[in-house]
Length: 179
Image (cartoon, rainbow, N blue to C red; front, side):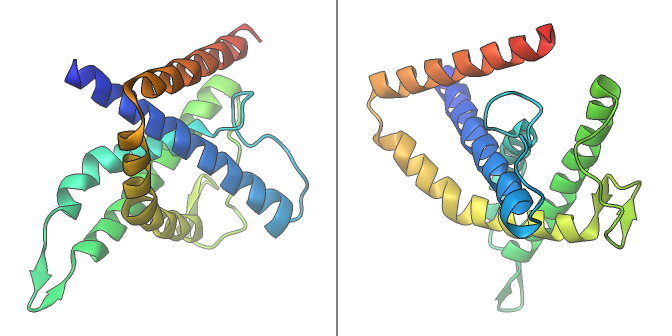
């Protein structure tokens, strides 16, 4: 039963970070670049699932590293290693996502050709560094807050929130597949 609850927790994290990713993308598009609003996700709802998947992958892969205190002399380099891990992992997730979208939709939703040090417009150094910074905020600030929030939920509230979000996501994916 404990494993099921852990999977449900990670699903809630996935949804939280998918929504945060969508908000980030819309903020960039509307406020920073002034291109106007468009739904930045591949699904109908206000979430970018690539951010959710990326967040869960970061949690599963970098949590053990975060718990270590790796030093060079007196200098703790663990945060630097975590940052580099975030940059590498998120860049690979974004590259994989671009190929998956191209395979399933005929296109991917971003174009980094305007940035220096890009690969086929799919990934670039500038966004990878931004993902590294965002990933540090996520792992060291947001995630502990979300863990406390979920820990304070009653069992019933936890299951209701999980069920509602799971149904919404399933309906959304179903809608995409039928479209």
